[in-house]
Amino acid sequence: MTFGILTLATQNDYLKAIGLALSLKVSNPGVPLAVACTPGVKSSLAPYFDFVIDQRADMQGFKQKVCLDYYSPFEKTLYLDSDILVFKPVAS
Image 1: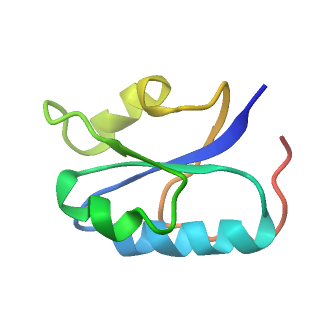
Image 2: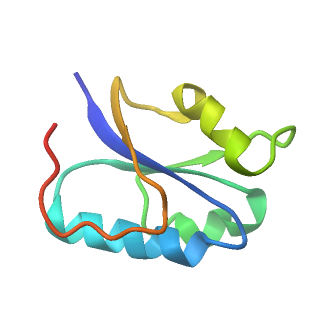
């Protein structure tokens, strides 16, 4: 069963998503990371995430969280808001 971590990002918070990804790569090496994002930040996020997924254009803001199952490429997913940092391993 594949386990991975998913976050969301837009033009307003993509730098926070990069910070989250960097903290996860240090504290959770080998855990795949995915981000569902708006088209304008896709190329900025690609170096930091294993999967970069387009967000649905017909939804805005927190409504994107309704689609987490749709966005996740993993069988088992931990969703984290992009405005946090992780300093310890997460349980899979």
